[in-house]
Length: 335
Image 1 (tube, rainbow, N blue to C red):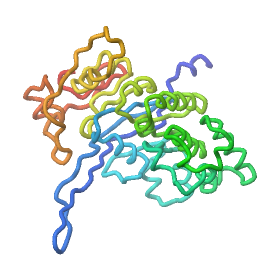
Image 2 (cartoon, rainbow, N blue to C red; image 1 turned 30 degrees about the horizontal axis):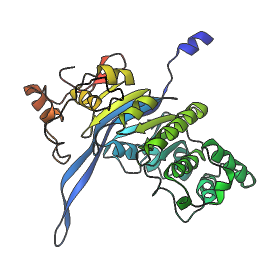
Image 3 (cartoon, helix red, strand yellow; image 1 turned 90 degrees about the horizontal axis):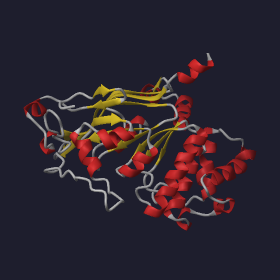
Image 4 (spheres, rainbow, N blue to C red; image 1 turned 120 degrees about the horizontal axis):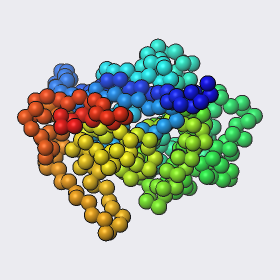
């Protein structure tokens, strides 16, 4: 019986089903304001993340990655769709207005922000920043708060004496470590990492990624890693989802995405990854035109105006994200 249990696949901790988020475009008149259009930021996005794994979400700036993250956490309300965390409907819990259920869910689902220079309150000391969640969620007794504070600082590579300092006294990498410690204060099960190293120097990025990978293994965390840095995504993710203009184009293991992608947009992204070895040659795919407007996205496949392989069907019929091989999903009529 033990051997059969070991063969079981990990269960899905997070399930996103047909998630849609449109932002209204408003026109202000003399007497009233009316909606004239919508920005299709996230359009029918579906995926799941298994317990203990990391899904990397990649795509060009403005493709909807951060909107997906914030909608999952209900920081922006969805237009439609469902999100299930640990079998519970996330939006139903938030709409219930039940404070204890919402706090419980918030403690289990946490967000590491992109910019450590704006995500920390400059008027609060490190001690106040990290212990504030203890007071809100009441998960640590008052007499043990200092011990837990020092434990968290050690976990993220900071020293006890840093507790009495303020954010302006730290470098960008140290500030991000403080932000990570604050997130871990509520003992989450799921993290959304929204480009956590994008604003850091190249020399610091690898340290923060190594820290996040180590914490994930140690604490058995599940995470959604959002980035346009394809090298870091390939390094930290168990599976990669490629997004373009609000739509998922391809989902597969990192090796498949990197070496055997079937969607022309994914292939173009992979060709843009810098090659360290000067002797290695890679054909770079140059896309034509610019990204279309999310207010008026193209009919059919959203990538077809820039695709080198587009034909009539691509302009008329939208491809469905479907499994073309085991654990490999692609939205392309040619796949």
